[in-house]
Length: 159
Image 1 (cartoon, rainbow, N blue to C red):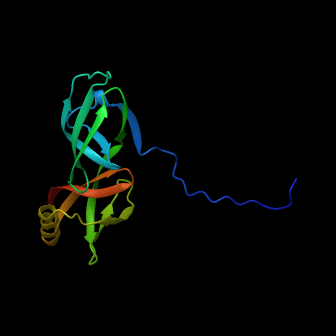
Image 2 (cartoon, helix red, strand yellow; image 1 turned 90 degrees about the horizontal axis):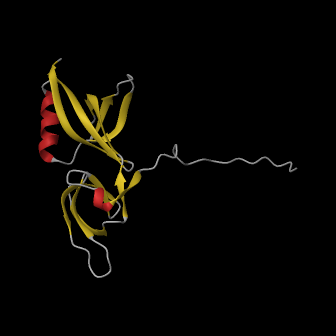
Image 3 (cartoon, rainbow, N blue to C red; image 1 turned 180 degrees about the vertical axis):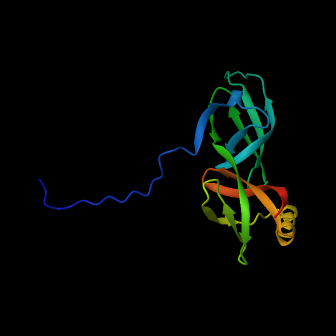
């Protein structure tokens, strides 16, 4: 036995995968897919016939759920694609800081202060105006593959 003490630092999360495999032929329009390491919502799927090598190909057109960029990919329909785990959570808006971060109230009563205001100008304007008027606002936060972003807004009435 050794007299030395060993210390291991763990930098991993709970081991939950950010994606799961799904056969390309089973992915449909309005589903999600990972294209070029980005989580995308599928807006168009087309399938080609089998060629002389026997693989039907699926052509996916997806919109990145965080940047709204259009991405495309072609995958043999029998192969597996990565599909992101996409979660949508509602939080009540408490405060907007000067540096562009928001303070949100979670269901458990804690605050979440690590999210920036959205980059979408229309949504940003609605959030700022509603907050300035003193309305109770609930924001929907979309999270996938370790990223989070405010994607929608609901007004639940005046304070």
